[in-house]
Length: 171
Image (tube, rainbow, N blue to C red; front, side, top):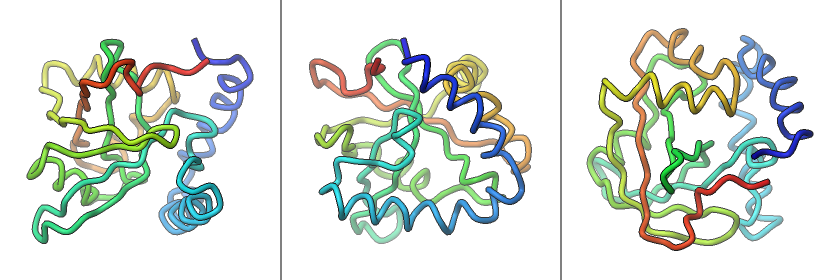
């Protein structure tokens, strides 16, 4: 169960995140804010993690094989895994990290400052509505990014053998 204050803030801020202004500014401002937070906290704080469960995904580039990192919101899947959505602020192109996971499904995540190995699998078409329902229970209206992007957003389930799971919901 999420803390009532955090739920209230999500309901208040979720509509802002769907505005044209946020979609224009977010892709430029959020990565800068994340880099500053990473430097100041030694990687223990993900800015988006203030309101929603967040992680830092470490992948290998699909084409280059070079290390890549992406700060992402995640939604606990209820079975110890996490769902991540390649919304990319409703832009028309899929974010690079989705191609990286498709090519190299074994990756690592940092959650609350701790690093874990994960395995990524694409969420099947017949499971997408249920996954989106879970995501939108956490961040209302988030699927609008998919509708507005004009593409089918790539959804992945991340699983780990870590006990306890890093993807359990915080109170």
